Image (cartoon, rainbow, N blue to C red; front, side, top):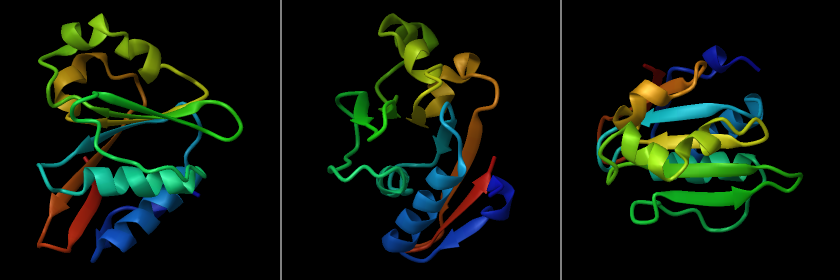
Length: 144
């Protein structure tokens, strides 16, 4: 399945967002990095939860705001890395904790919240997904 057939996508609920993200996870190859662009409350963590479900991850998925990176092992090896860079000032700070190893893991997936903090080191082929909050329940997802 081509990502362009799934986008743009208008969601009317958290459940629809999770379902969309699960479909997207199943359509993308390992090594994919998705830069999630959206304001606070846009639905980035809801998207991450659905993406994880699409990869077969059943454990609770939460925002890594304070831990910076959450690692979720995949059943057949590799990981889903969910990163929240809100508290990171720039790519130099991110490289200090080894973010490049996460971003370049060919056997894993990376979801990056607040990607503008490290835009200069995001790998080629990064998918930039813009999430716009239309109302309390509606969101639109589109390639940025």
